[in-house]
Length: 342
Image 1 (cartoon, helix red, strand yellow):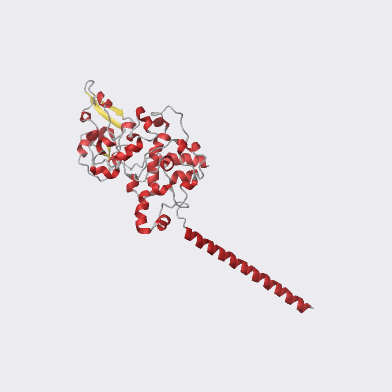
Image 2 (tube, helix red, strand yellow):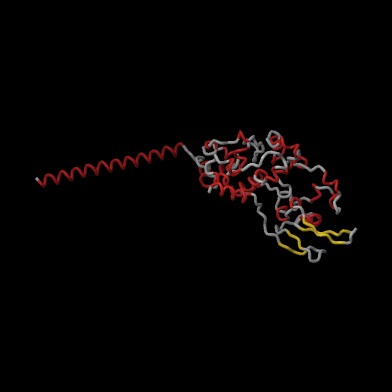
């Protein structure tokens, strides 16, 4: 039963939270329907971006073949479809498509050589810019270069293998709902590690069964729902909000006490953002006990332990005294009965 629950959980996590898209006619294309974003965000480049979305924003597109004098309809490759809602809800929503892609894509058909152009990475835009200093992109890059993922860079691994540039959000920093943050972040990992089609693009290794690989983990389904993969598979960092140094699987956390203790590593990773804010106003014990970042063992307090032992001892003493008095009363009552009989 636990195994099947694990499979269902992974399947659920792999599904992105896609909002319902309204279908409306696209101006100038009679009878043709496109998906229109419903986020309410008005991009300064909406008109320019629509040149791209009119094809890449849906599963079907059409174009005029002037050589044959025909209108051709075709299915868009799933990897080339960009959801408007998710794009205009992402951190890159204020960008124009051609901020990252060549202006040559304004032509159709697209020149074939554009597919060979080098893609930007995070530091190309954000590196060395004081406006983005608080996000620590340089330190993230330094951690990544020590990560087990870095060895796959020649095979095509990059920032975008985990962080889709069209949908990327600063999820854990802006989200106080731990459950949502866990699902969002785990989806980044499972998109490869539980999707063999994506996994085999980067390695020739055999397919991994995530549930079977974690059979050693007690209450597996609860762990999958409550913590992120990186809590066990990445080295915690005191300064970075999200660790990027992914360790080899042999070095993954396996000890219960590393999380379920007063000095839980989760307080410096998953609950890092929440705990900093809440400790200022509530104090450590109240912050951990009163919100969703509760971890078994994390609220342990020596004074509370002592008080609990004293109360427990007093209860036992009261029970013992009660039993003694009952025994004495019973003996006395029997003694009285014997005297009256004689």
